Amino acid sequence: MDFGNLQANWTVLGERDPLWAILVDPSKRGNRWRVEEFFETGRREIDAALARGGGGGGGARSTSAAGSGGSRKLWQGGSRRPWGSTSRRP
Image 1: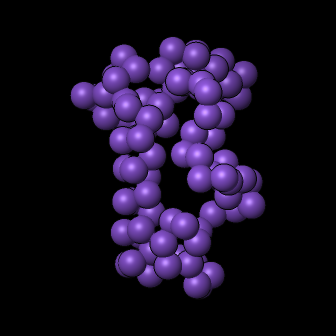
Image 2: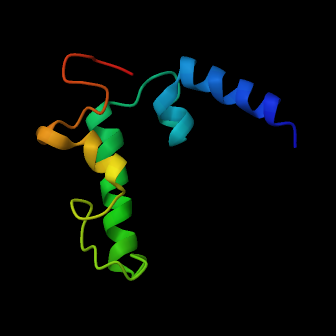
């Protein structure tokens, strides 16, 4: 695998359509993801995985209890915008 090419592809995707690059949905291509809708999709999927027993034995019961220290920092202070409360897009 050519990691230089892989990195270049992800860089372009991140610059052009970052949310779609992470969660591909044909109807959202072209920067059509709304930020709250994007994150709510993730919360629902994680909660469903935890409900199925995909929590890895860590005892997490919801997205509010799951995640690494880094991901918890993204949501500190009640903000749901990991890049800051004044920015509209990453």
